[in-house]
Image (tube, rainbow, N blue to C red; front, side, top):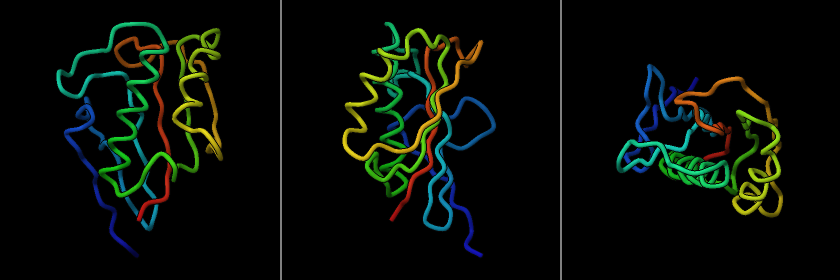
Length: 128
């Protein structure tokens, strides 16, 4: 059985708890949920769900690239939102990152997310 490999990159926010940014195992990468923190400052990106979704997906992209994967190799995402009434705005940004052949997805409204962000996204992808 192959060993799991812990993935970490300075190009995405450091984990803010006892978890890894991602774990690579047996040709798959499991990315922890990313929130809209600027990796350079560790500060929350100000603005609404549109700006926060963009930062989240940029962070996820950085973790995937450090794992030997990419947004194009994502199989499944889970989107956690503070308010599903903002779904259309999040979805507009999301569609620019996952154009043709988007991954499977679940979207869930959560009463509270880390640091009271508007959106958090996790994913599973194929890696090289």
